[in-house]
Image (cartoon, rainbow, N blue to C red):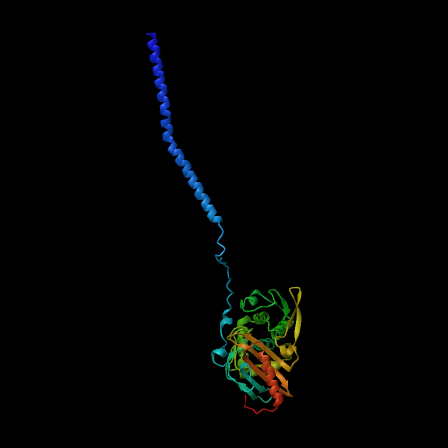
Length: 352
């Protein structure tokens, strides 16, 4: 009995051990595919990641063209005035031929004393006159008998009068006498000082412009109108005949004569000496016997020039408007001088 009990106990222990041993492989076999799947997935993810990195690092084929890109900055837009054609061009006055082959669309040559017209070209046209306006500016200042030694200060309003239209070394806060301001206005055509001359007039700019138009009417300048003291406005308009009257009135003042033909002038601005030169190269070159002159330019007016000069002993007034090219108005003046030198007594066309 004892033997059988022991035998049964051994058999039961053996069966229990076998069942435990057989159960373990089943559990491992069930978990094995999951781990293998995880490993395969990890391998695939790693492979894909490596492929992506390799694709990023893969250089472009040697024969493939590489396209370079560049950024082009747009050029700053021109001021509206610079885009517009001149009034003379719009009126069809440019390109008209004449016997002197002048490059100016409009011209008038007059004997200062007899008022005989010696030469004319489109002389009845009323056009913008640009900085020739400054002759009237100086005329009004002088005849108002304002103190020439009074200090004028360039203000922000003078600087901003025509934004983007002017360049100047005369900065805000610059100080000078009214006389110096007139000199820079006539000689080097400084717009800011011309604006300041009008602003410092009794009653300010409106009163100054009113005085300019009143003086024009008094001089018989029936085709003329003034809108500002600089000439930057295209509303400053006159005709060649009217301009001969303005030149004659301005010539009566020695200050205007002397300032307009001064070759250069130096003045202290912002604690620095600044040298300004005459805008008329004929004055700087002493190429002609000039008694008074004034240049002008805005795109609406083209290149302009008025002069009183002595040629073969004869005082003549020259008016050139809408001249094409920076130097052509001066070349036209030389052409007229040479024409008069070769023909001292041209037949009078008419009298003003």
